[in-house]
Length: 500
Image 1: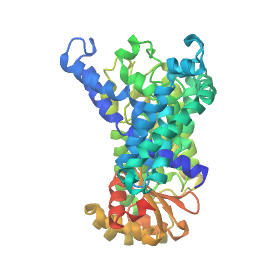
Image 2: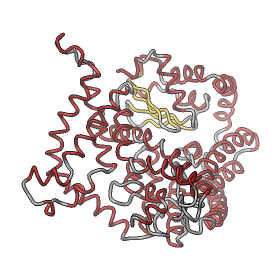
Image 3: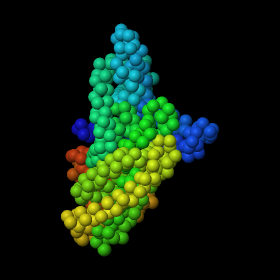
Image 4: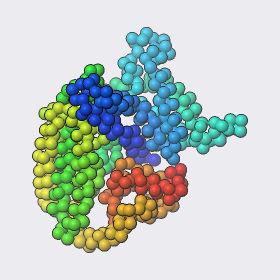
């Protein structure tokens, strides 16, 4: 597997623990709504909800270790998750400042500051990756009959605990340098203030096609480089009291996404619809309405972005630039809101009474402006460059797609197994499959040969995009049902694909 492919594997594994954040956001959001002044002090119910949400946010590093280990394991087994937890506990315990001082024989005050921040998401990810690799290597090992009880999956946590001892000694040397580099990177962006936030947002969008935006997000949204924007924002009053948050600043790497996801992209969807040929408007309308609603309500943008990402890349670069501008404006004006999942209506409502939310309603005003900017700029560029956005394809291609799409999509819409079988056929059948995985909106597939993928058939089945990353890796964008379809595909193959 290439370096890029491996990084993508880590990126999609990160979605497992990140998927827990909406629970924390909902509980803390409702808690702040119930008690916006006391932040839990004046309401037992509010305090209960806020603390329940904080229990998740404060333990994100552990969730990363468990979730990444599980997500990267070859057959998604709980033993891998347990190994991730074991590895994290061993490493973080051996790298506590007092333990480091004892092992190195130095006074506690001389221990590098890096070891005071050893319980962070970066270390969680590292432990998860190591545990997953050990699981994939040792979960099938059979020991002598005297030790048979510890064979297979039971062996993995034991091996992990031993390996992490050696990793801990290595980390005593390299962690201070890694930590220093991460902090320097974060500080270099933070030092740019709102400009840095805009630069981050620009690259956040540009990395989506290859799935590496999750890695970039972890630097700014979590405690990899000391920024920790999402947990600090969701922490609200507690973060303020502990000095982890600054009113009007914390949340700056999140706020500007709301105008884009709730308003800008729906404006782009309207432009694409209006630019479609008359005979194709009905087909394009159904696609744009569904994708636009998902973007507005939940903040899930991939179904809409992939509708024009590859057929009109100039539009996608424009979209990335406008996203950077939006995040810059919100940060510059100190219009702050945050999210636990994505920048949609649900998260905006939940964050409205968070103590760290500042003039959040101005993001709606900004969003209305960006709706117009997206609509008119997309319309102008599409017409000026005659871009083949959905509904503007050559008539024979569009007509063929419409004629063939109806029966497949209709069957798949009510039967996940049928849709799974359809995509199995699209990618060349069971013999062409090495691995099946999924994230929020994509099937992430490792194949023997991606040349066997029938892109036209995939789109007739309802896919909004097909990305061939290299000769063995392909992603098919099918929307929020991706995880269900992937599970159904594995079921149809009897689990063989997941075990290869």
